[in-house]
Amino acid sequence: MRKAGFALSVVVIVSPAILVFLWMLSLSLKNEIDNLAYPPVFVPTPPTLANFVQVFSENSMGLYFWNSIVVSGLATLVALAVGIPAGYGIARANAHKLTVLILIARMTPALSYLIPLFTVFQLLGLNNTLTALVITHLVITVPIVVYIMAGHFETLPRELEEAAQIDGANVWTVFRYVALPLARPGIIVGTILAFIFSWNNFVFGAVLAGRATRTLPAAVYNVLTFEQLAWGPLAAAAIVVTLPVLLLTIVIQKEIVVGLTHGGVKGG
Amino acid sequence: MNSPALPIPYRPGFLARRRRAYYFFAVPALVVVGAVIIFPWLFTVWMSVFDWRIGSVAHFVGLENYIKLATNQRFLESIVHTFYFTLLAVILPLILGTAAALIFHREFPFRGVLRGIFTMPMMATPVAVALVWTMMFHPQQGVLNYLLSLVGLPPSLWVYSQTLVIPSLVLVEVWHWTPLVMLIVLGGLAALPTEPYESAKLDGATEWQLFRYITFPLLAPFLIVAAVIRTIDALKAFDTIYVISQGGPGTASETINLYLYLQAFAFYNVGNASAVVVVFFIIILALALVLLHVREKTKWI
Image 1 (tube, rainbow over the protein chains, first blue to last red):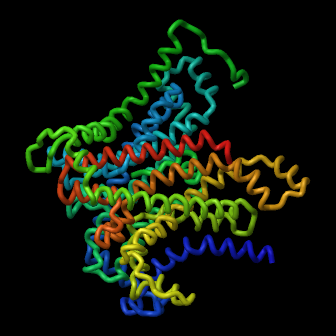
Image 2: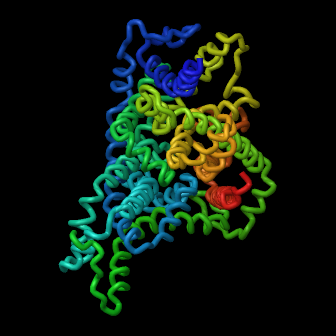
């Protein structure tokens, strides 16, 4: 009896999470008649990929997908280039006041960065370009990488680095050949979290991007509206947007949990 | 590594020089942070004392933007909506997240897989999630009203109702972010000592007493951390509200963030929007500080 009650509570807390995703999948695999039927049709019979074909052929989803990869990819690369050394410097110089800056950045609403940056991009003629989007996405990626790397370098033993220093290696050599190889697990977590939160961002793309430079989330909202499209293609588009992120999450589930709970980092 | 504690040869100024060298590692990041984070902060404060629409000339107006906000009915209502939304979107995930953490703290078959599934909403793209919830909320064809009918409840208007729109949006927020609370609390549970439980059990304490007098006080710091993070995120909530209700019906679900978006990117009223940002940031900072102060005082639990 006790056991059954516990099993039931597990089912109750887990099912909303899985059912929403299954419903998304169900909507994307059904034709329009079944999607609008009442009572709802739960299992697609037979399932159809027509909705996916439609969003890709009629709505340049391929282009938006590529834009998202370019923007999130470049923003993450720049963040790694500046954020890994910064995290190392902060950890070794005990400059923890610098991470307070990151925490304040975490508290600021994303929209408040957008107004000044939008104004400046307007002056520079950069609005509607991917460059403007990459620069803006640094607001998300740089704090995540700095925060995670500073925390990670803290946990690495200093003895190896000190030994190398005594052998005459300078600070840069020690960082490059001793600390950096040891930091690989932290770098992987930082990279994936930065990429995911950049990928998930909606409002930067919605404001700064032009027709051809929209990222996936912005495109899904701006281009594929309920007026133009039926539920099936919309659900298919939603899956295309979020599937890469869910797959990444599954791949490094354990590390993500550690990264998220230690800093409570979330972009945007 | 046979003598790991070997001292570094001491020369005057050696440590200071080394420290300075470490600071150089942070310089590129500081340049980027200065350009995309600190510059926008300063520029926002600067713009908030100007009357400026994009495309026109800026006039210095001092504190006029702020004074106007203080009497702007729509803005004041957006603050009320934000607080209402935030209150629910903090308390409900805290309760449910703690319950879920207590469940996942125990050993049972497929625990890892089920925990993975439970945390999936947290990483999902908010816009994609919002689209699906929009379809689920649909009053005629939505699956939620069908589920209500299965248990004998009348259909609801969900986000199409002035009174239900905010609770409905909270439902999405709870679904989305309860996993993060669960993970934080689960981390807290993993760090609990075992001795107090053993002696309390020997003294015949009930399961509820164990939770109330041992687990809960020891978890309090973690709950506060979760509450701070949740408060900041709920105040900043934008994507799902914007996609699902656009602040409507009417302005029934217009939060500060939604109002800000309209001022800035529908009316291009940059001066006014910047003043909103400054006020908004002060509200977020104040609430976070209040919660951190509570954390210092958690002895009462």
